[in-house]
Length: 75
Image (tube, rainbow, N blue to C red; front, top):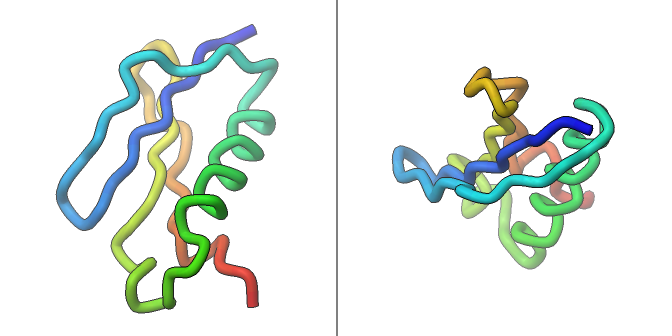
């Protein structure tokens, strides 16, 4: 298991995740980030979702990836 942190960004404002989650791998972290972004973006327009993202960071502080909310909007 590895610990991943899911930081929420809205434009230039960051809400950090101080706890994180223990997950098997980066793929599981991606799935968790994607599902979280879908929940948080439910009901948002593409314009409202723009500038919002989840930054996934490993326990060593390395950014693994960013997931933009626009990528998770259901069409």
